[in-house]
Image 1 (tube, rainbow, N blue to C red):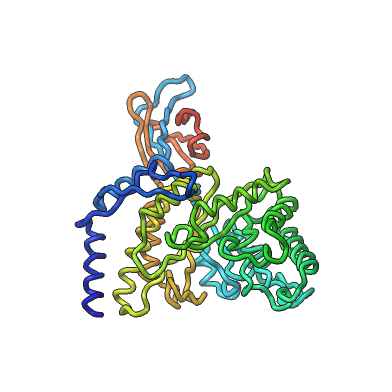
Image 2 (cartoon, rainbow, N blue to C red):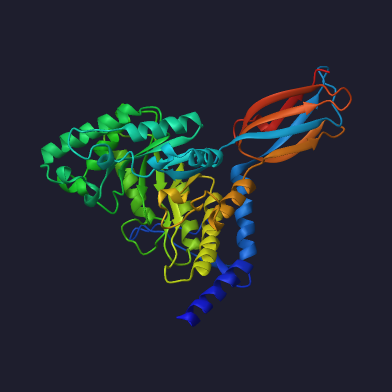
Length: 450
């Protein structure tokens, strides 16, 4: 066993150092055939450095914008040597974390969460079995308070989940209901939770894990999911509705959740009468197991799903390690695998957010923790902090040339830019959104009134 572990660590070291080749997917290398609608994978040998270079290229293309500043006086004379102070206020990409009711009575946990994240998924607190454990006895006090905290700190929240297709997560009283009574109870549940939080959430997981499970389809018919998506949409028409599934990126051998089946179910929901106008999104749980992650498969899946044009959220990302390994080895490998999947995911611009599952050890994160009991970073926390810093523009200073021009490549998001006259110190500021469409021709005109 020890020999096997040593060999495994050697392979991981070589991967990390780039001394052996890995396979890079040609992003045009998927195809569908009449016989089998599946993802076709073609491999080419690339070093780790080349793989990373490709990821950076995609980040620059999909998540950044080249801004061209033109600084003038009111008479349109160019301002040479003007200093431009560029401050990123927000990012178009959201870092998120799982949240539980334990945050409500822990001030340090609240400060930690609010200082890092702009998005959240509640673990259990919005699920039906949590809000109505007994028929007719609804209690929304925990999710109400958690959402209030999120609102106060500008944290967007996903509605996880309206219904869950797995039989084992149904209350006993729900399991016993005959079809007619089940439909009435489920509709009541939909109406209750969606009307309560209408317009306050960034999205709803309407029917969780409906590729692997079929509790409602078995009892209410094959269109059960589509019916509930329709009902949620009619109540909350401006909120994005998601499928949310595991193993679509994690496990190439899981026949139930392959990307072509994911798309087939999504399209079936959209094709149901009355559902054509639903704003749909793709939710991928991303619970990676105790083995090296198949990044070639991940790349192909995300490339395929991105072609829908729908927003993709990685909703519950963590990396589990083999409990048989010693703590040091387990920690080192977990960080290696986690960084690989985070970098590969981020280079796909359709991925709008990554929710880490979970963060603080107070939430009992048995798979992956960002902190210990004192809210001090683990190695996982250090990695995520480093990537958070890498994937933002931060505060930048540039100087205009003799034509009053300056150029800078920035991450998409909201910005405040201040131009300062080099002679008079008079300044002019502007706030604007940066993405591929918000800045015409990527040109920003700033006028100094000095």
